[in-house]
Image (cartoon, rainbow over all chains, first blue to last red; front, top):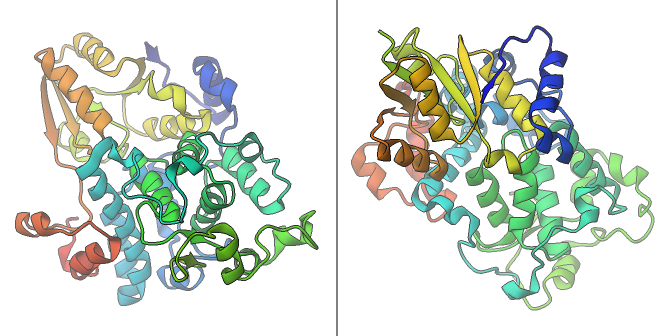
Length: 272
Length: 148
């Protein structure tokens, strides 16, 4: 079936998509403000700041590039971004180039294992059996009704924009796998439905890194970590601000709580 | 002579892609796969669509990819398909389906992050990122290695 290409206004295109992709529109009708295309990608590329990126990239308001949707679809190449970063900052661009390397790395693993990205690369190193993990994503997570201000805001952001900061992806993945004990595949499918940069390599293998099926330890975080990198904005408005926050503990305490059967030094807390 | 149809796949929506540069003025087609559409949100479709609209004279279709490509070949009087390599199993399955119908498919190499020799490539250790990075860092941090 042939589709139209003669749109004058963005709204006209979006109305057309609603009509011609009714199943997708029925499931999640939102359209992101992030615009597709090489022109938008070049504007973002012109603004990258590799030095600031290396210092602030873990903060939600840090100088991240937001280029991933364009890289995922080959609108820009990794090499173009790499060269641009090196020309601007030389050796000081290493952190940004290193992060581009992560995408290349996931792609090379994908090339080797293909649809194996959907299978656990290794067993969970959490002290739990595979059968202990639920298969389905709980409704309160994808509808943004967990009651946790941070997680619910991240869920709504994913649905509305199709983009999440990398640190947020790690928190969400960790919450789903380690606090809710859901298999990573359920969360990975949810991300792939919505993320504009969603591809099975970077997405699934990153989920496996958090889950510990493609890393030596599970990744988890605590309230202090979220507070630090979000400037406390979610905690201040959270109904669980004063008591009941499941993340409000030291890493040692959380490790005991989340992974009671695990060896003492087998965990990854905080930053990657 | 427009004998080649350029098949635009999801992994290379660049209006300056090697296929579009090598085969100037040849018809270019993208197909939304009806099976993939069952699992993605409208905003993902919109993003891809907006990327496609910047490709000159793009033709956009939806349905079974191999069948839609063959229909586009007939409509554009093309005898073969040109595309850019993708590592996605989905891409490889479509190429197999086309070749089973005796369609000639030329696959151009995709742009790479670092240009490794075949020997380095064979020895590349992908067990963990840290090992991979140790092996590619020198090239990745060098402007001399640029393929641009």
